[in-house]
Length: 469
Image 1 (cartoon, rainbow, N blue to C red):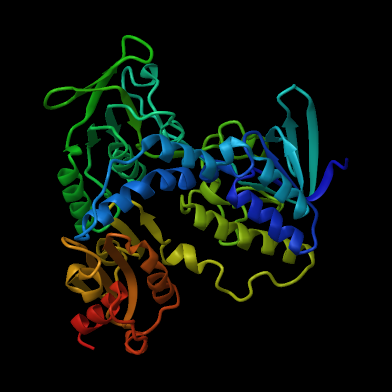
Image 2 (tube, rainbow, N blue to C red):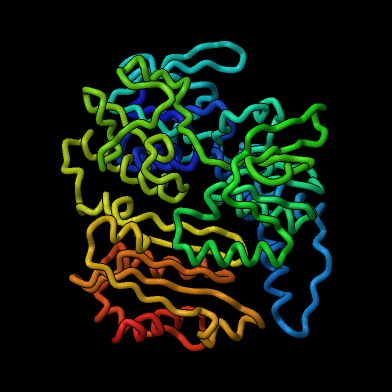
């Protein structure tokens, strides 16, 4: 086996796989290093299994809104079994085979930088192999769940996204620390699958980075389902006297919360602590700063790149894959001495705001800037909002269908800066908003994109009418 390749990728998650694929398409050779499962966090412990757990809960809620249909109890064991199928029973054989078909060489082991263009790979059996990159090394090691330094928390062996998405059973009582996407999604999934006493401890509220109305709708849904949300409280300490036994969460205000499991969903940190960054002049444990071509800005020689969560630009799988496609194409173009900035739009998706879906019921999805962000950025902002439940297509989805839409407009250019939808199953409408925002479609032109009747997407017509067109 050769130990020299044009490109060496450290990390075989979705971002790393896409870098290797695009580099090989561009005529280069590539090796991809992974110490865990090929396919990465998203495939086994995040996006895929979490949505498999959420789907039956969401569907049960939809059915309950339609007169004439009844919803029986969810078969939790069947849901967990299907979850196992969606993650291939934690067997990455299919992903390894795909990497070989690229073709790229898959190297199993822990990859670590050892100076410019060198990656030392240590296998589980202790054997060591050194890979050399002729053109580039790409870091795609993703991120890990962050566990805050609360007294007793680490000792209580809390769940993170890994444990909750891979759970073999559902606890009767679940406490959730955090109010972001993972906290909201997994609180609703576990509650719907049997965690009857579910308490969300969100010091700063729910979904704080999104439009406030979206968090309000999710909070209403939680309250109706029986999920307790306590905001404005701080966890002061955690106790779990017996391993695997009940856990007690003490708070700055009010009575403590007792649960059978505690899920910590308070954010992510880059998985760069043992990556050898210090051997190339970077700080271990930090994100790797990059330019719009994903090339590391703090390293001389123009050979080091970073994509996905490793660079901290947008902690979303689809954005990591986008960055990876950019990165692989750029490396291949530079290797050939060709211009690498065509068609000149590679930085647009990151700069304009990444699309995101929160798969709760109601779903929340957004792209671009919120109103607060747009105003802070100095735009001449006008906001248009509309009650989604008043759209005929939404009303036909079922009784009690609730939702809202908000468009943030740059009045000077009359283009959209951001769009947010909240309502059951609205995530499938997000790409239309993404196109409108990223392509800067003028509102006068968007007026002629006629939505079908009776669909929920008729909200586009209502928003434009509310704007005055």
